[in-house]
Amino acid sequence: MESVFEAPVIVAIVVASILVAKSAKLVRPDQRMIVERMGAYNRTCGPGWQFIVPFLERSIVSSLDEFPQRTNRDEPALVETEPSHAHDTKASDPNGWWVRVGEKSHWAPETETLRSWLREGRLGRNDLVWEARGSRWIRSTEVQELQSHFYPFSPIWVKWRYDLFIAIWPIVVLLIGVVGVSVMSAFVNAGLLSAVQALSWHETPGRITHSAVLAQGEQMVTGVTITRFQPDIRYEYQVTGRSYESDSVDLSAPGRVRESPDSADAKRVVARYSPGDQVTVYFDSAHPTSATLDRGEERIVGFVIGLVMTAGAAIVLGLRLRRRAARARVRNSAFPVFPSASSPPPPPA
Image 1 (cartoon, helix red, strand yellow):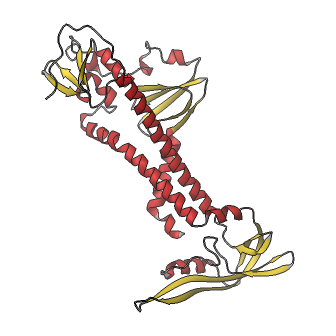
Image 2 (cartoon, helix red, strand yellow):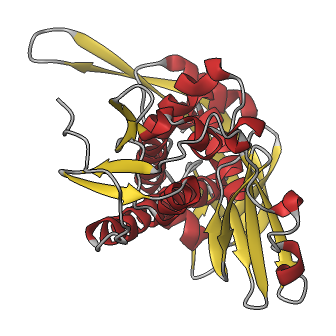
Image 3 (cartoon, helix red, strand yellow):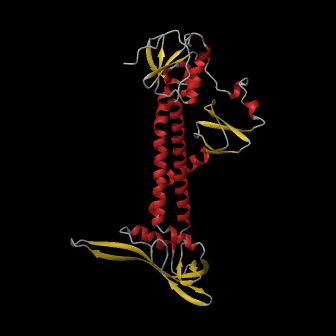
């Protein structure tokens, strides 16, 4: 089982557990949660389990009695902040905006309407906006008035990093889920069910009577002899005044620990048990001959960690799919119709 606890796997398990713990927030029915992304208002969440992006977002949970005051648009601290140039009349388009979603153009009479479409999900990162000053279609992420919505970071040079984060974070979450499934499978194969059953076993003092590395050679059909090593450990114990002897050290395999072509694994086990050492023996009260020195509690802990990783990844990806479906319904619904003094610009080349 030492191979399961190699450094990369342990680091992945710890990092995934920290991310899941930091991202999950429980909002009660009498509360609301405001999410700030890098100090700027991002969204308001209702009751239930909500998830935020660790280290990039911060949550503020308040009761319903306090919530109307905290979310009042007259209070700039808890409403979405805009950069100073967003209110510059030179930066805004006085004639409104043409938005290209799919193969249709829609008219937004003012910048605030454009921002509301972005919050509702009608306007996406890959949709196009007509730049009247340059007479060209540009991506919505390039519109100066929408920068604080798409990029919570103020320095321009980090935009590509945020675009990369938006693109790869679902893949990272999926990989965490795959690692979680692999961890669960490894611990199941390592004797998880036996470890769960052994939790109810009783314990009694015992004594090591023999400890050595047992080498067994196996000749292959090609004539090559392969040597396999396993710890040969025997101990004695008493149950209700009757003496028993066993050689089962680990419940991961019947009898002894599984064989390995590497003698280092067997030597590590043997080093822990020297002849004459007093040990704790776990035995089945219904069958006292069934005993072991290691019940394998770490298998249960490892399986639970893998389960948390898998469930966390499934929840996050499920919420993402749910949000994408909700946005798709909004985008497929009819856009508000506003009168426009100009005809739609030509479609992008």
